[in-house]
Image 1 (cartoon, rainbow, N blue to C red):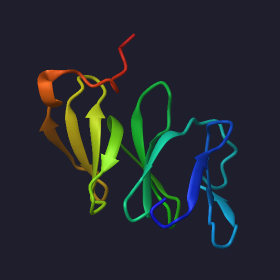
Image 2 (image 1 turned 90 degrees about the horizontal axis):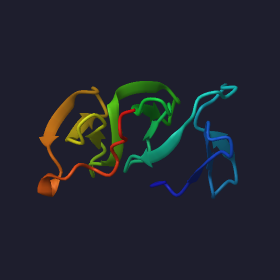
Image 3 (image 1 turned 180 degrees about the horizontal axis):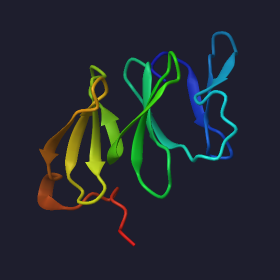
Length: 129
């Protein structure tokens, strides 16, 4: 993580463990949760104050989690590919058509950015059943 902590997915795929290397203390991304929901592909913001990740295998909804208070907010039916340098925008790929978008980490507002270069569909797009 940008602040020097380490984060890794738990073996059951339902949470992330975060270790402070200076103190040796551990915490979990999702607190007071008995499990049951998948969590994967975590991408931490440049400031280390938020993380965006997938929360459900059946639909690729992004969830934004605030690390200070561990609150969660659903964003959009997209797959995260990265953050802007200032931590304001989350760049993502729309699952249904492979187009590129950016989502505001503050407001959740989505802005279209177009298709990937070369007109090729993103390899991140999952085929529809």
